[in-house]
Image (cartoon, rainbow, N blue to C red; front, top):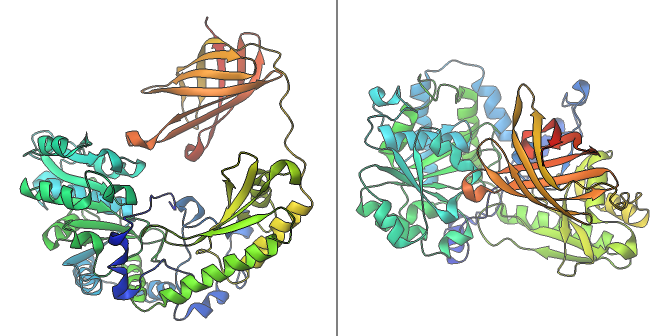
Length: 525
């Protein structure tokens, strides 16, 4: 995620950085010139041949945009590892020891992504490497450890990796609530690394002190962070910390690492593939194991200061170019913490004066050629609209391409979206909704809507949760949106768009990361 919150900022972020000046990973390093042989400007990737459009990534390490590009040294490690057989337990032991040396932690493990690392860590805290327990996961009936404590500030969509092993999530918000929740049934306390953790009553040190007093280990999710050596979270007393391999480290997209207490990391390996049981599907091949080790090796060799300076220079060049358009202002914002540690450029203008919104430009660039992914932005003034560019997944020459494309659209805007029409229908009432998913149908959803002019308010009930809904009516066209936030440990976004015909309406449903479906509804009252 980007898509992950920024990790601990302030003094917490600065000290460990001095050891290796570990600022965010860039798209260069020893051997980086080799990328031209394999990138989109050189040998064909094969994507276009199957009808998939590559893109220029000005958003960052979003998993759905395939994260980062692997370093040449990582690609080379994959190729070399693919040329011989090894015994995977022996490989895990050797890689684990070397990861410990490189990161100054007790031991390490390569996993099939950060989420898998969290799941294996949770299993280690539950079962401790005991195969009799392992084969029962996720059915924890009769287990002593059945709960995971997650502070309110750390609830997020990635905690599913913790409940995957069958643990019940217990939410706490204060010191007293944490002390009361800790007990013999507690397997672990999970922290989602970000600045607000260290600004809260339950900061890392407080959590560690209380948890360790109860004999409970602490697991930190630092997926999108840079790798600090020595590790900032382990120095604060955490027992385990997990990272994504395909973000700042620029390893394989399907890899991650788990670092920390040797006994728990070794147990986590027992609870992972190639061993059977619940985690057999989270396989790490010899190629990914060696490639991830190469990525961590390269982390200590890369010139992070030079990478950061390069990203900043790219943003400055974009800013100079777009500033030639009258009324455009720019600002380069520096990161606050360790997660997604990269500068960002914000470009703003008055939408009415220039006749185009940032959202329209973002959507147009994404559908254009070359395909460019950047983010929409807004200013403090409601009249301001704009875009933002994150540089640390860009390649040489991308900044100029982005700047030229944005300037062209500012000078010659695409047609604006059609203005809303006065509503000609009333959709107030209770609607029974039928949704046709990819391979199933649901009739459990309900829309309770109130209409005032063109505006809609109400609620959207589904199989298990009810959330607030809002929307609008334009002529006979209706749009209804609902959101269930990750503060609950999940995130559900529904956007119903369709046409109203009396007491019936139907159309398309956009479910965000869960893609699309069709829907129809009948008014019941």
